[in-house]
Length: 336
Image (cartoon, rainbow, N blue to C red; front, side):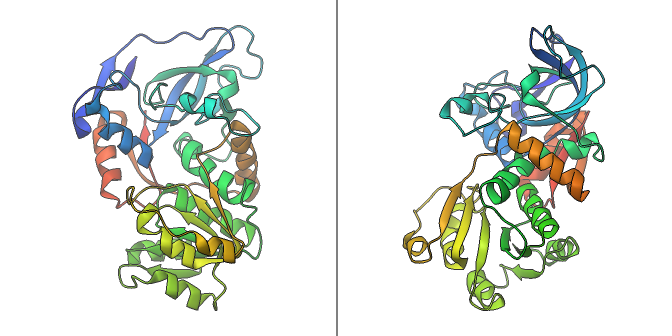
């Protein structure tokens, strides 16, 4: 079979397509014929670290969907032909997060990912693809979808009548927007592109702010909400946006912290959280249990993920390059 490996070079040069042996499932494991995989900002960060060593030979990408091709002994919950998608953390099945789950993140420091024609995973690391979704759509779910679900709904409790602030129009942001609209919450979207804001409006965004034209977007948000602020904020930007998020939070609100897109830098002043009785919810993706609950919601609400562009298996370097431009609206996917 063919699989992409990380291999020493800088940028796209660190991606090598190799011929390798097709893996065989052991007891409790399932082999998946991968049909699609999607990219996340994390994958760019990992690719940029390849030159530092320690990642040579790693199969990248956490997100992928496909069809069960073979099962190992003792596997009863899956059969060949079942449509499945892999959970981001191989070992986080249910319950509270534990630090011991970190090494089981697919496509990271210690665990191969999904950018291969076949992968083998424990049966417990898989969920069923919602019947109304294609493999391309399902491949967008494990990181971005589950992150938004875990932070905003499982822990954030977002519901009807709430107000969500979404920063940008990447994968997590648009899942958050779609979840908010489906729940009857108001969605505020900030972006530097009027064209993207128009597309976000078509998805149900109700307050749209171009932060290039309106750098003080926090003040514009407070004015648009008559001083109330946002009950939920998907904090994707990091130091470049955090102080404005703090100034935008409603009393009793929740900042769902998931991103470092503007880099690491000075720490924000968190005093306002105390005065507003607000919370920060730190989120790194979620469990298979979160994934399964989200899929029920997607099915019930007939939600389809937003796919920006689909690349072929031989176009993976171009997919990474497109993601790096930041011009995407939704998810970038590779179809095998």
